[in-house]
Image (tube, rainbow, N blue to C red; front, side):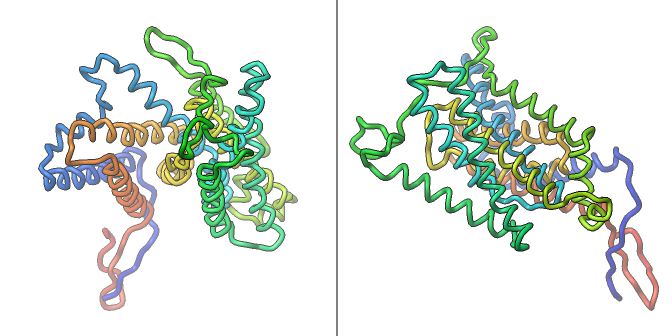
Length: 371
């Protein structure tokens, strides 16, 4: 008997949704079993996690504000990565691009914040973050189109170059290092939130940071860009078949450079939003959005609207786990990483079952087509 994997006939949208929901439910059940093994009530933990500790909390609006600080960088980074992925350019360098964008934005804040109006400084922070991250990303694209290098390997290695760079800035006390707090005996990054920061729109006690509005606008613009513009069509064609794009007269190398630059620029913009909101650099400034954004983009199957939905859910998972960890001492916030990995693994398995089926060949014929 031999086993064959064959392409499955297309399933209805409803069946696909049910399969994906089943995969997520299975991950939650696995997490629940682990919680039980640690002596934690899964229902109580998940209730606390998915409500982010806001029920019965007199300052629930603060939890919502902090949640949005996680959501905005994640969703913008995920949308940015999806641009490159649609073109089958595997940009694994979101972490490094985010770090350099954050450093560039902070540089503007420290140097120009005290002398320029705040709106001008914020605009320059965004532009600096975008330019620095964009150049960091397009450098890899240029090497790929010129020499055929592996973008996966290069972007991965450049993540660590950026990480070591910001670590160097955070540990080197010197007269030139304006990133550090001069009043601190040990090297720590200085806070510039009193100099410049993105404003919030007051809605009662809740403050809606303007970066949330910008993130939604970016999502709308990228959706329109991919679906209704010539450049978006070119990205889709290059992603499907570079040979076809060449045959159609498209300048494939230029399209790759343009798209990767845009992808990295948006990651730099997400970094500017982050540091312009929290007002400080750190070696963990990314909160792993460069890695999590890859998960979000693939779970959403590179669909911009779905990216917003999944980013919101992943954000709840991450922030909610932190809130739950404050109540359940046996479980730390890293439980979210484990649960996130389980969801990704099972959703990818579900995606395989949606696309393919396993059949068994017996005595020269296919005897079971239900896989």
